[in-house]
Amino acid sequence: MEKEGKYIYCIIGTKQERHFGPIGIGGRGDEVSTIGYDDLSMVVSNHPMTKFIVNRENMLAHEKVIEEVMKEFDGVLPVRFGTIASSADEIRNLLDRRYGEFKSALRDMDHKVELGVKGIWKDKDVIFKEIVKENKEIRKVKEKIQNDTGRKNIQAKMEAGKMVEWALQKKKEEEAEKIVDALRKTAFDYKLNKTIGDEMFMNAAFLVDKGREKEFDNIMDDLNNEYKNRIKFMYAGPLPVFNFVNIVIYPEEWEK
Image (cartoon, rainbow, N blue to C red; front, top):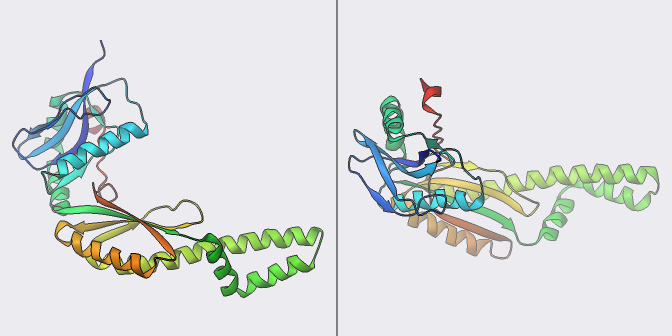
């Protein structure tokens, strides 16, 4: 029989034992509850020590549990996806050893949530036309391509491709800066993550006090109206503060 461990979702500040329902990762209906030390607790569920599948379903289950906990607690520290302790005693020992670190992080994240904003250009062709119009050097190379043939033409196309790629990245940064400047007024912090494809120019996370969510929402409404013909915004939240907390837990013997 496989040994059962304790899958860890997050850390909260409570002395009381809490239960959040049979929503544990892995699809077995494991009860999610707390294991505590002093006034700190880890939110956990049973999970086999030797079997952990990294897939989208489990990642969503991990996040869903944390979001459920967020409904009841203002301060929640997400733990890295895929973390399993061997026993309840190991969790209590961990909370004891790193008590000061976790308490400090909880204070920093108290009453805060993460809000995610992605900016996607609606018409890529319009953006590339703007790039050519704004960049004299690119226009010169394009004229050279139209007038020349053969080997020089191939070199010119490669040169143009590199110049457009550089100009596109610069345009992404400039456009993202405008949007971030409007939104960061309401945020404690923000982080720019990697974008995907030519159309996405911004992928940002904002750390916002729960009391200012409505203000953030209003700014998003204004941005949607201002850029309705140019940008599609993807707005998500409130989310666990994954981009602003990095709680990494190793097996107990590694931490001694």
